Figure 1 (cartoon, rainbow, N blue to C red):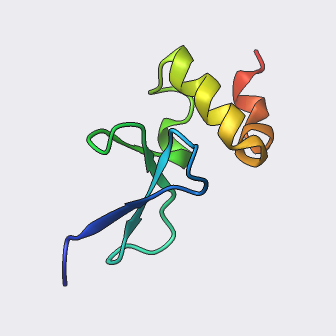
Figure 2 (figure 1 turned 90 degrees about the vertical axis):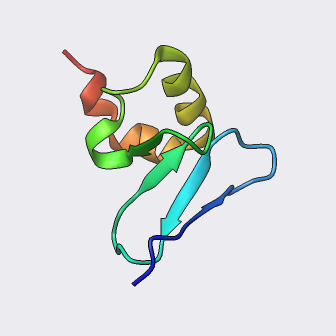
Length: 73
């Protein structure tokens, strides 16, 4: 078992790095700086800054729409 994680971008111009952890299946992890890693299902948008949310929504319209109810009062 290794604890290696790999960072990759969906598009070269993206600011978001997606995280691939070979030991864990089914996680949707991402990072803006390769240091702090967010879990899509538990951290979006609650643990993110307004700027991070805006970048995430711009680069990931599917997930933005999928979780739009998290922004409704």
